[in-house]
Length: 296
Image 1 (cartoon, helix red, strand yellow):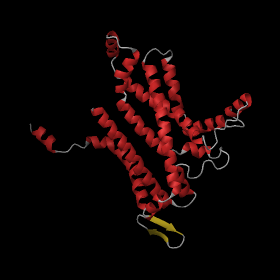
Image 2 (tube, helix red, strand yellow):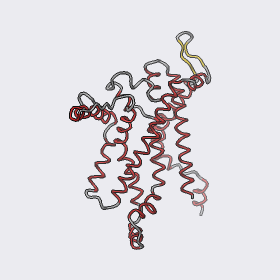
Image 3 (cartoon, helix red, strand yellow):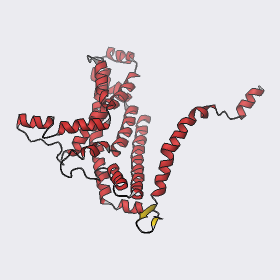
Image 4 (tube, one colour):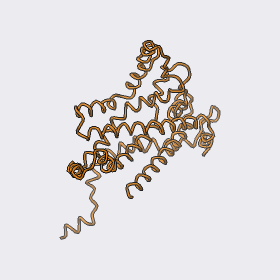
């Protein structure tokens, strides 16, 4: 009894001993850079007078910057179009694998996940050479069919980048969906079949409702990833003729070029903070909607 009273009133720090390595890395890698970014966003570096405190001037300038809003609307359009297509394909693949009627299920699961294991830089370079109208697969098809398809044309360039992202991350989202479907006991399917339910009825009434939780997770991750779009357009910039991919093509590219090419790190920090707020607000709205749907 005395030992029980002592344990009840004395804090137990054993759990923190396991957490401190992660906590230290998290503070130095995430918290400190975030605080520093917020700090420098209130300052402005000048050629005469050095760095001075300007308060919210950088944020006011950013909100009136047409280049910034152009990049935001571009990634917003990218998100609205690319994310639903990618998640639809991922869900369809997961349902096919879970049906147990697909031959070579293990090979299909591994082969669809494999593009996610390929680094984004390598994936973009591969697709960049595929898209090449003079030297790539598209160019060979143009010569064979007599067509003039140009995947680097400014009117379809965003769709070409979306195709790369879809190829990269569909398998990853498919595994999340498949993991949710794997938790459903197969006896439930057998009972539904005995009751006369068709395959489509089982999918609609049993499998799709089970995907709601994982759908919310994949949507949030996909939105965050889309608003952080950087690798693909940055690498394709040197492969695309002309000035189709500008320095402000996406918010991340704009922030990178402002900071490292334009010597405007303070303004770039303000841009990064605003984009973080926008992304968190959208992700939080999606999460709230998902929670309401699950509570019905």
